[in-house]
Image 1 (spheres, rainbow, N blue to C red):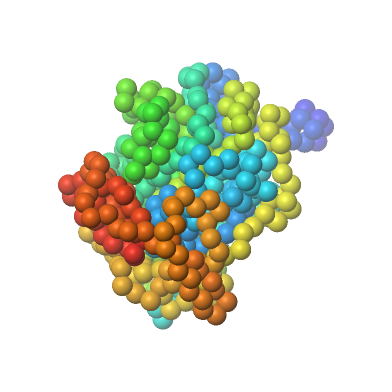
Image 2: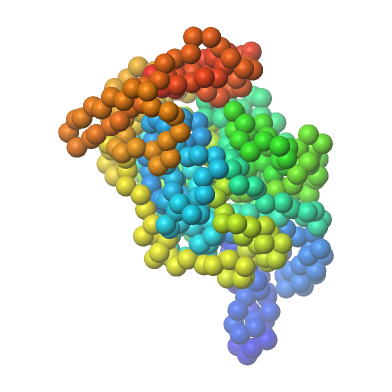
Length: 488
């Protein structure tokens, strides 16, 4: 075909999926029409061209980039700082990630590498891990695979920073900012409005073969292929987690006790195409519009498709959640200087290709994949079948919220010490076992509660805790171990 002719049968991608249909596009140097997610619903060349023109003024510019796996282990420096987490997480980002992370730590300065495509991004992002439960009762970690059109990262996630539509001003997250989305204890969706922003923020995509999606509902959190629960059928192309964080900040708190109340979703109705195209403003209580942070995790469940039990689906999240409703994610901001703000101001490509953002420095796939951390909790979490989920995480089906299990034989020590310890040491005890040396700081437990009521999932006790020990109504303070109690 000559340059400038009409080409047919192009595969047009959506956010991590593809829709293959007969569609005519202008062939310029044999290159199909730009593979922006905005173009997935059009069926002819003219519809594509006219719709692109119509959508451009309100289109959402974005960054879309891969991050390979940093480490998989039971650390969560937001919810359980300084101690081993109750359940396993998979983590990406800068290698300054630690069991405890100071709120004002210079993550770009402390990190010697990042698993993310942009060198300036030393942030950390983490989620629960998906496991397959065999019919014999054993568990094995579901591997992650590279998403579509991201190169060859070693598992990990695809990260999006999406700018609001309608020319709204977007402000970068500030240094020290952190947040969590989702509730790991949820086991039913009774109180989740499926048409609200929160109801569409966290979901699973049941891919057809070859990242296949529904042509009528290609965008995340929309259509019959996306569900709040884990899919109830074998997915030919695997399962994708879709996780949108809120994008409205109260402008005051960097990291409140619950890690969530400082953030809210935009107001107004959620459009047919989901949160990606939601142009509503921020509520008065949370007036600052920040980038919409969106994560995709591609779980390679294909190898288990011929091992499904006769009834029920066989997958479970690492906190013992077989429903998937407890899917959640954590974020610690760690971009260098004003790099994210510059990218939001100047990188306005609707396709989000890393090469289109010249404000940022790209990292090669090889260097991304070389950036890893050693596992510091001396236990097996992946690579073979396990008798139980790591930690104290028996499967809890619901519908009531899951309860924290305190008594089990799970390992509660880790190798090495936090990179930036903050507690003053009064008594230090050292215990040594085979190949593991652990240093523990012991501080007198306060005898009287102090301060305000602690919100749900906030810390309410433990050795060295000097804050309040009283939870808000509806929550109780549960001891996880000698060093950490939590309102649940």
